[in-house]
Length: 238
Image 1 (cartoon, rainbow, N blue to C red):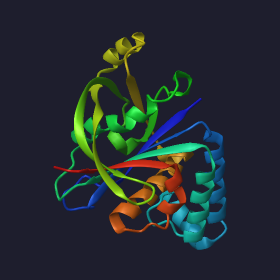
Image 2: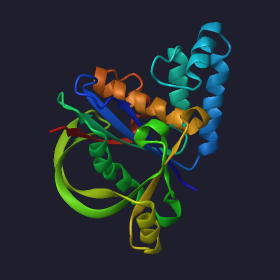
Image 3: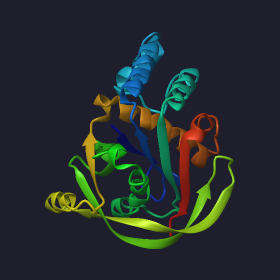
């Protein structure tokens, strides 16, 4: 069974980060991810300094991770398993990036899910409690639009292009259940979970953080580890 996880790095404010990265990770190897994160936690517990950090955070996070060699080994282990990484990097241009806009552009990530064979499509996407809220969110594909995009290839070269974009609209739970009855409808549910209790979300935080460091700080050290698994788009905030 395929599983999908959402995360973000950066912030929505105009005066915060220059970039906002939204990341979707799809995989059928949840157990392997859990094993990798648990092993990383065990390594952190071997030293007082890293133990104190883990106790404060109560979970694995990219930000302020206290052991760079261990972070690299963890990302390398994640890059070896069967997973696919999709990301959107937004250049905010010093403009607020509100929650509604974030919802509107999620369809560009969702679209990758619906390109999969029916048996591989996840029934829902798991996100952290802070991503869209503490209650499940429901979306349906209701329209298409054409937009200009800038592709970031794994070779580091940026290419501009135009493509049809899927427009997913937030709907109510009752509407979601109705759409599900129609096999031709494309609907998705975002189910929030506590990342402290969800090791897959902790792994996605590391992956998303690696992508964010590349775009925000021009630091390719971590991104290079996972870039063969990653497919992304850069967009300008207008």
